[in-house]
Length: 107
Length: 120
Image (cartoon, rainbow over all chains, first blue to last red; front, side):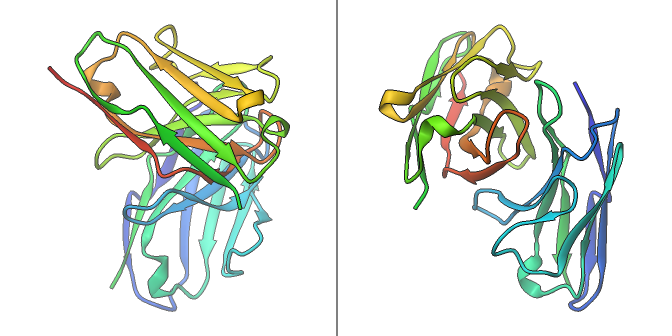
């Protein structure tokens, strides 16, 4: 089973700040890495697929990069509505897995 | 509009069984892989199982392998999860999720979840 490790677990940030969340896979997964946002009491929402592909309706301040084992989610000019927990997720092989999540708090 | 409605959750004793269902609408069900994902109270997301459109490829998390069985009925636009030998650590909100395509693609739509509580 592929393990995904996110960093940091928690981050407190101010509006308009740039945020970077990293995700490291225990083995190479190519570009089969996706990012989700989950707000309290809501279902997760797909933000980025295949490491860097944008999703229709998702604000352009969200972007992704990486391949192999190291991936990054970047949020440019953070807004208050971005307070949420962010998860990376891999779909390589028969077993999918999620990272442990990164909780973003807006100051 | 894509809709996924889970049902079948509830309180069950350890060692017993439960069957979850997911009713899908708003898309061509048999064009997509489907998945179950769970979230224990206050915890992160855990992928549980996935199935291709024609059921020829199925995957399970190590934590449920041998106890849970995923299946689908394309004629009824429904996804199922048979859960046997339930344990306290299976307590979670169980989400049904639609794939964006085939097995190996991410999920793009999720239901609201059905709560399973395993306790004596």
